[in-house]
Length: 462
Image (tube, rainbow, N blue to C red):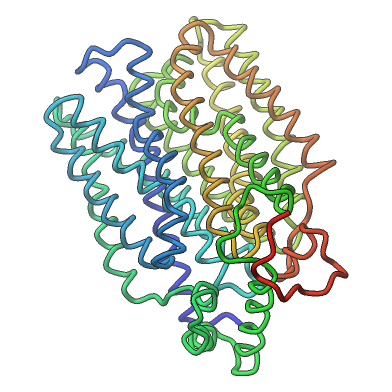
């Protein structure tokens, strides 16, 4: 199976869900201070307002597996596009705090859903040799969306729109959401989902359109059928058989957020102001962070299928530890009295932090989770990984303003210690998945390297 123009189109369109994912999660960074002042929010309710979308992502990630299995990956992505559009328009027109929180919650449902379905869809249509790079396009669009959000916030801030500034920042997302919805109608259903629903002819046709020869398409359909025969379609995810991939997904997703990445993304301008930057400079420094994220994501995409997932995670973990420890030390040393040197130390450390995230966890997480679950429970497994990610994200983002009010050093020191644990996990536990067909990964992780394929789909999970 080779790459052709149609496959590239499908990957780009599906990954637009990632662009909106990144934009929606980062755009709040430009509005959170204005919203705190407008609605007179305490530290607790300020954190809740920022985390309201994240509560939606937790629910959206949990709920996305069902429609993805029942109606298909593409139809679920269409629903997600509608959620993004409604959230953007509703947030821009919000008439009070309650309506704002509600529409941010709706957007969170879309973010949680796209974090499940977009990488899963791309993994299911990609050839093994290129799967890492193609699924990583989702991550590229996530960080591109983050950069767009930071840049959009910076440009809107320069316009001095006053009391309606935050409305424009939140509302511009409606334009890419509408484009995403329209382009999805030019993509096919996932062929692996089609095989699971007995639509073998449709699946063969899609595989051929995606670059497989007729013989390759027939073989791919047979391999997917074989993997499906080994398990019942309604088999539960939480059983001894799937313990290893379940624990791997939970671990990588939890560590992703225990780095503090979303606390930095959501509160970037505020962090830089805490470190002594003026308002406009803080917004511009946030753009620098977003640009660094994009550059190192591109670098990671170019090597993920060559060096593998573990190498990227190792490099990223070491960068995390060094940069977070330096940031924590700067806040402990300078406290609330930062000079120019202190501001540059924080900026430089967080640029290294973002680079480490983009090259490591950011590039690997959605690729890895989309690879490690069998065909029959992939949607459930992806939902579990995304739920863990967003649950931890909500927890970190909600608590950061409270902890940072006491000491920015405490927050970053905690994140650094968690990354030491991640480094140990990568070295001793994380398996390598580069270049391996999805069905072969399934056999390896379930301990079936030499076991014959079972033919009874009704046997109980064990």
